[in-house]
Image: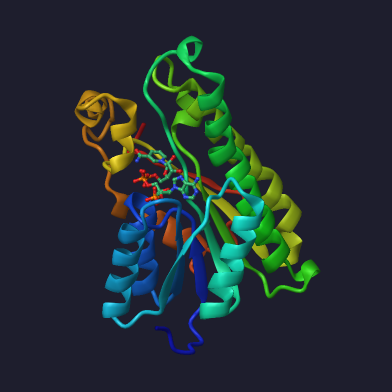
Amino acid sequence: MTSPSSAPVALITGGSRGIGAETARQLAAAGWQVGLTYVSDRAAAEAVVNALRATGSNAVAVQADVARAEEVSAAFDAVEQALGPVRGVVGNAGIVAKAGDLADTTPERLARMVEVNVLGSLLVARESARRLSTRHGGSGGSVVLVSSGASRRGSPHEWVDYAATKGAVDTLTIGLSKELAAEGVRVNCVRPGLIDTEIHAASGIPDRIQKWEKVVPMQRAGTAAEVAAAIVWLLGDASPYTTGAILDVGGGV
Ligand code: NAP
């Protein structure tokens, strides 16, 4: 259950695990009410929400596939109904797939990768613009998109397709930040490096973190908490003149 509050409302896509769940915890600790989405793991999403509520924060979980426009719009509606107008949006949901060469991928895999990481980011950004922009009757706010250091590396022999989708997220940040700069909305991007979350399991490489952390200048993988701290800074009032920024959180990579 939630009770009325004047605390600002954030919507996080993919808040059931990893970077999204940690961002939810840190935003709640910073005084935000949090609406988080998940696509399949309802139990994990509800566990995050229950933990936030146990600390006295208002929070809700909503099922929504970011690749479906009507589900993205419905998620914003559900969060606004439960908590109030959204002021901050974290476009975090994203997928990888089995590591390999592009030549060995299937068209179906490529389509889903683009659908979730590119179309999903565009739909969440579009909905944010329509709800937050003063030109559309909103009260302004802030959007943080989650890209990846893969957009610079290109990720050969692992997931060139994934890297390319994150390049699109970088470009989306640049363009939308300029479109909305005079309409009360800041748009920024965080580009995590090698972060220790469950996402790496999909690569099929059991020791992927151990394999790659040796080439990180800091000689270790990062944590979801270290990425979330950057997201929270960019989303809130501590960064009022920062827009169009792409912030690498990658241990020096
Ligand atoms: P994760 O632990 O696998 O969590 C992914 C989250 O996204 C889950 O909440 C999942 O929901 C949700 N999700 C997946 N597909 C979705 C869809 N179609 N619609 C809505 N939600 C969906 O991943 P993570 O490591 O925290 O990564 C979060 C973001 O950071 C991603 O964009 C990823 O590309 C990026 N990133 C991660 C790393 C890293 O090393 N971990 C590095 C660079 C960038 P369910 O629980 O319901 O499946």
